[in-house]
Length: 357
Image 1 (tube, rainbow, N blue to C red):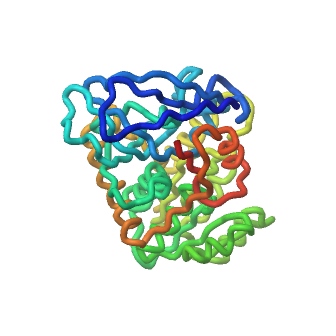
Image 2 (image 1 turned 90 degrees about the horizontal axis):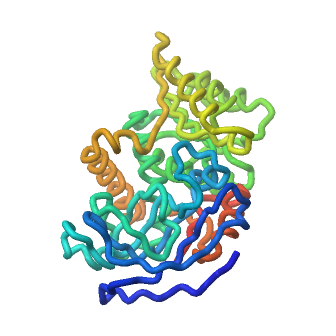
């Protein structure tokens, strides 16, 4: 993958143009097929700011987009990048100029894999200047996702027991910590290589490759789990439903087990939603939900942004207080995005792989 030089940015000025370095996903390619380009960016448009990116990252979303399997992704080619952390370099018409120089985070869905990016000002969340950008990056989308699933969707309470599948991943490591912080017992599935780390975070780890996984998990919670967080989908979802206690909630939030299956992702995605919809109307005292991070962002954008800002701020406050430990799996240069993608997809690391422009 070509790696042209990054152009340094002077944050003390607001230049008319900035040379941005961007990673482009040109089509359905292997990680080595990612491309790097530079282009001139002018002034931000109405309602926008220009952000000098300090950190962005690799999530399940970009892994799906690389395969052309993320529902609603843009047409190729495009710049991926689900979220970012950076400093406002310039403001566009209709945006308070006082934002210039402010440290911010934002959920972008695409466009974050860049040294500079245009971001809608209304989507910005302030970030304390003394926090490490890469650590904050691990808690933008992952932190909001974990917080909302735990406190808004499942409404967990102290003294309950929850099950977190894939607990060594970006969302899983945050879920575990937030649940423990809330006084909840956590059982976590993960590879044995991550078990010591899971115990250090306060979870009780179980090898996800255990032959009778359902039996092993039931033995740890004979009365069932008050919440199960399932990012796997497929055959895992019915098992998660069976493991629920009366009054419990299964929260499905991805379909990672189908990532490498042929064909469109829409089939398994709609199958998971349909299964959850059926469970929601069964009169058996258990609950199901398919969590969507972007729910309401078009129908009620102001409410969506207020909720996102409140939840991200709550998570970052816990990071600043030392309650949460950011799980940075690795920090690599933006121009090493191919290597970073390969590492993230290897499933050998804990937490989130971060790109540093």
